[in-house]
Length: 448
Image 1: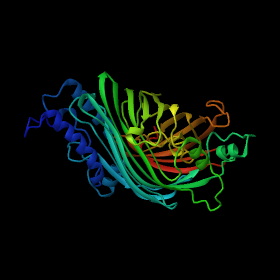
Image 2 (image 1 turned 135 degrees about the vertical axis):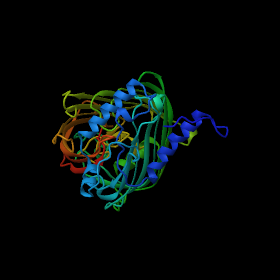
Image 3 (image 1 turned 90 degrees about the vertical axis):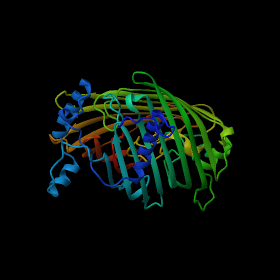
Image 4 (image 1 turned 120 degrees about the vertical axis):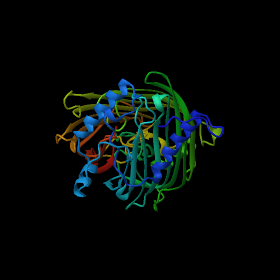
């Protein structure tokens, strides 16, 4: 990044911040290009530090030994691979197709970008994404997301914007545990996991700002606005449903609500890459306080934790990785709307619980754990594979406590190296779980 001098009354900090925000905006406006390959160390400016030269040389060697879809296209078009320059961006665009129980069959477009800001070799990779899609179940979904680190990791900006027309299959509250209680509790907890459909308009805006207070340690805060409108069960029988029972019991209107709150978080990260880590850990813990003065329908206080650990099994082939993930959300006080309850695929990236639909298991207290083995198939890393297993647990209103019942799931997948600079993989997974749950999942970047 160029070192800008003060111009038109704007200082360097303001200009750098403007560059960060423009990067997030450009995710939506990008064209189909392939990843920039870092220049070898001998092409760097003479004022580069020794650490920068060593890092650039190592990255150039790693890039030269790998093969991604950009290399394949250039080979087909008989174009030479450029290892010398810095003219190409790190933006990629692909069709966004998928088929799974949550959405039906999906078609759309998705863009992902990665970039390091500044010249500090320890700066973490900034990533952004955007997508627009439509499905056979009538779901229309658009989002923009970003995770940006300024030079030297002094600041970290995380956020997303979502606008969607949703069709959510609802499987009730809890973990699918049989109950002999009243008919109302049986309907609410739906132990047979018979689905109902909930349609709604959904809007979300979330932004968090972190400040590095020590090496790899960040503290920060932000806001989140979750708005649902025109909620409709499409049930012509007018029979009681889990959604109506829960909403009436906890003081929410059936056709709309808002869950708006303040976020306070602590983050610690040593991951070597934000898209596909070989080593390191990631920990984020924080509180969310929904507030009526922010137009939230009810007050509520939640505590969440997100822990990820990556262990490379080989120094020669670091792509052999065992990855661990644990995500928890606990309601400490107040009430949250039914569709905002923590549960399957309700993590920030909506990638947990592959094999089950979104919200298949949910409750006010929820815990999720997953282990995944990642391994190369080809020596040039163009193809690799994964195998994964996960467990979910939650509570219900019939007396089941969190950690009392665990529901398993798992599967395997294929990875195609899409962009070797940003370590972006095209991910194809087949996953399954209990109650006949199964599905095919396609996306960019690892689940965690």
